[in-house]
Every structure is written in C-alpha cells, then in structure tokens.
Length: 359
Image (tube, rainbow, N blue to C red; front, side, top):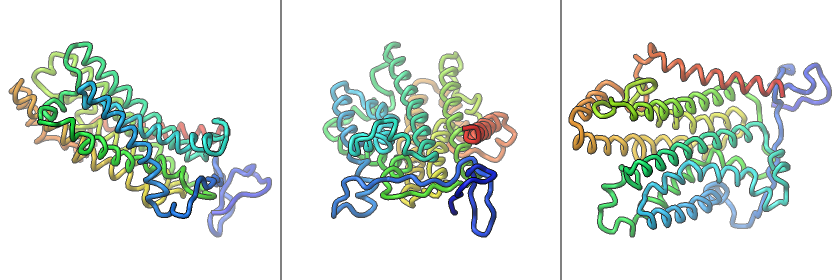
C-alpha cells in the first residue's frame, strides 16, 4: 500500500495496490502517530505494552465494585461495572493518556485518531452505554417492585459460608482480568508505539461495521422483546420464543459476541491488527458460553422454573431440544427475524460508508 501524493482526479482520495493505478477511496491510507509515553528499560513485551496498562485500570475498579457489593450485599455490583469499564478504558487509552501525559486538549487528542480508531471508540461506547442502561434499569425496576436487591442468579451463591471473604479473589478480580483481555481490541491499538499506518480495505471494513450493527441490533431487539414478554401473562407458563428469541435460546449473548468479534475484524481491515488483539473476541465468546453467560443463566433458570412452575420448566426443556443455545440452526434461514438482523447490519455498513464519502 502506498500514499496518494499531489493533486489528482480523486483529489488525493485514493489508494494504490502493488502494480496498479490509483483507485478511488473515501478514506486514503493515513499515518496515526502514537508517541512513546513513559517508555522505560523494562517496558518490553506484550504484557507490559498491552495487558498491564488495562489491568491497572480494571483491577482497582473491580476492588471498588467489590467494596460496594459487600456493603450492600449485592453481587450485581460487578455487573454494573462490566459494560462501563471497557468504555472508560477505551477513552482513557485513546484520549485521556494524551491529555494527561502529553498536555493535549481533548479536541486535539481526538483529532489524532484515525478513522478506524474513531470507529472502535464509537463502537465500544455504544455497546457499553446500552448494556449499562439495560443492567441499571433492570436493577432499579426490580428494587422498586420489591423483588430483591440483587440479581436472583446470585442469591444461592451468597448462602455459601464466608462468601464475601473470598469473592474478591474468586469472582471480582478474575472478572477484571477477563475484562482486560476482552478489552484488548479497543485499548491495545492506542498503546502501539510510533507511527501506525492505517490501510483501507473497504470490503473488510464494511463487513466489520455491518457485523457490529447486526450484533447491536440483535442485543437491542432481544432485550426489548424479552422485557415485553415478561410483562405478559404468558411468562408464568412458558419461556420467550417470540421475535429474535425464535432464532436461538440466547440471542442477546449472540449479539454481544458479534459486536466484540467486529472489533478485531475492523482492525484487520485497517492493517492495524496485532495478534494479541484477537484474544478479545475469543475471550468474550468463551466467557459468554461457558462462564457468565448462557451456562450460568440456564443453570439458574432450570432451578427456578423447576421449583416455581413445572409447566414453564417443561417448556424450557422442550426448547432446549429444538433450539441451539448460541448459534442458529440452518432452518432459521426462513425466519424473518434473521433477515431483520442481517438487514440492520447491511444498512449500518451502507450508512457508514456513505458518511465517509460525504465527509
């Protein structure tokens, strides 16, 4: 990839590939310069450059969340932190460090970001802001209705003797480490040292934006439709199978996974991807599947439904036999909600590309 120089028919908005003429491009390759900050003799290796800076933010936040949770007997405090910590980390890595350590203004720091970096920052902010609102509003609603001060999933766990004495080391800090890894695609690029060449691969970048928009839409629809279902009389005898819940058993977690997979894909389509940043999407997927996502949720559902509603428990068991937990089966190709989500992804990618051409 080489730089367009001088004036040409594309007004400098083009890119060249090896052995070819200048192609029109809404966003030419640019150099984003990341000045080395506080580089010391021992600051070497991936851990020092990428993981440690994030862990230094996530760990203290987890300790604060633990203190609040213990004082209020609410494990849910860590869930409030889950979406907001990566947002804070992303903004600190992209903007805050430059303001604090290099003396730039906020607008100057934002002006140093390349288009892919701005997309990353926008994406993680939208994801985290929406999820934080969802968790906070759900918690507040539950408290107002007198249904408890903590997420029901954690009530059984708290009955264990000495639970809070070990929760910091067994739950809060481990999740801080997981958050650190998950956040790598939206934090590590801002810690790269020296000049960073950002390329322009329109198909891959459009795919990344589309994947994000599809995942984000899936999350929004899943939470909205589930909330509506829970307010209906059907909630007492059956599980939600309407809308995007007809695709898989946990469309909200699938949407979250798609959002996080879009970040390393965007970096790859911008020639900015470091191998360590791939771990973010993988760690998020593994966490949702096997730790704090559908596995934990269904364990709680099975226990609660079997005790309170045999009819709903039977419906829950039947649904496990007919629908996958996370990835849709082939028969969803005829499901209109699949194409609603795909359409949202396509529309988002088109709008973003048009925006780049105009501005």
